[in-house]
Length: 75
Image 1: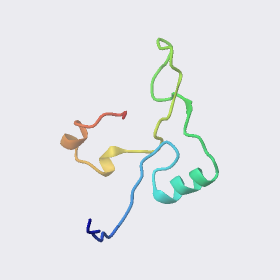
Image 2: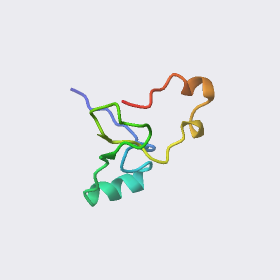
Image 3: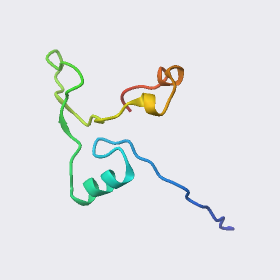
Image 4: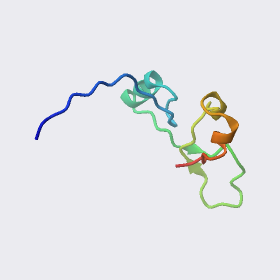
């Protein structure tokens, strides 16, 4: 099998423990957990009270309104 060369020109991350590579790396190295109580909606009617929410993220910085409507808030 012939190996092919690749070039990595960048990396990005939107995660519960960091919204950029540096913050993510620092959190990983320091064992930070992204798990916390849900804050984006009232959980009173649900059994689940914890999640790994992405904080300080505004999709409008990356996508136009039409494209953003296609995206879910969860994965």
